[in-house]
Amino acid sequence: GNSVTQMEGPVTLSEEAFLTINCTYTATGYPSLFWYVQYPGEGLQLLLKATKADDKGSNKGFEATYRKETTSFHLEKGSVQVSDSAVYFCALSSGSARQLTFGSGTQLTVLP
Amino acid sequence: EPEVTQTPSHQVTQMGQEVILRCVPISNHLYFYWYRQILGQKVEFLVSFYNNEISEKSEIFDDQFSVERPDGSNFTLKIRSTKLEDSAMYFCASSGEANYGYTFGSGTRLTVV
Image (cartoon, rainbow over all chains, first blue to last red; front, top):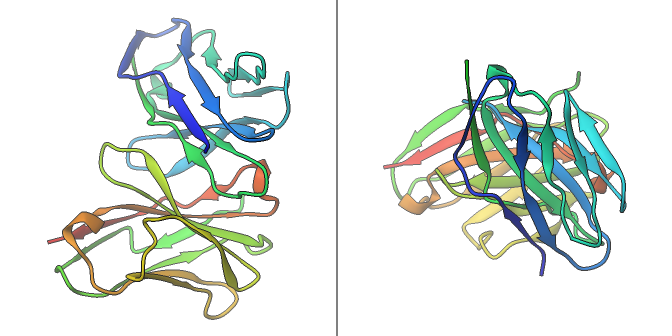
């Protein structure tokens, strides 16, 4: 079956630091990959996506590249801000299954 | 930007009572979903709904749960007899094309006491 393994948190960084949150997956077929963000007290928001190998998703300074050879989709940002403090979820959907399979989430706290 | 709207934002209910969680998906979306997130745990898939019927459901979605699209705009999740372990954040989502990302609502926090 499908599964997503995500770097455990919490992660605490200083403002302007470089961020990497690791995500690897197991899936049948060729999944689509997503990062969702959950700000305190809010729902899940799609941050970025990639639908085929070597695609790079990007949004708000965040990037992730779909690496089929390493089955990974690591989230990166060159310079984090306090406003990036949130929980980040890696997720996939695969084949005819329309459901999303989520990782366990990584809590990011950015200190001023 | 179009939104998925969920009501109520927080509901407290007694064990054994029925609850109905309501959602208004994005109007031109065709696929509808419910997910839940028990505090501090993963977001888990419950059910997907397409063309007025359930298209997929998880093991969590047992006979206590049902979904309905009663009027072409609302999408509801009913829990017939709530248990303490049903306490969670319930998220509704909708999508136009399923593999290109959903739009989630802001969730209903259900507390069963």
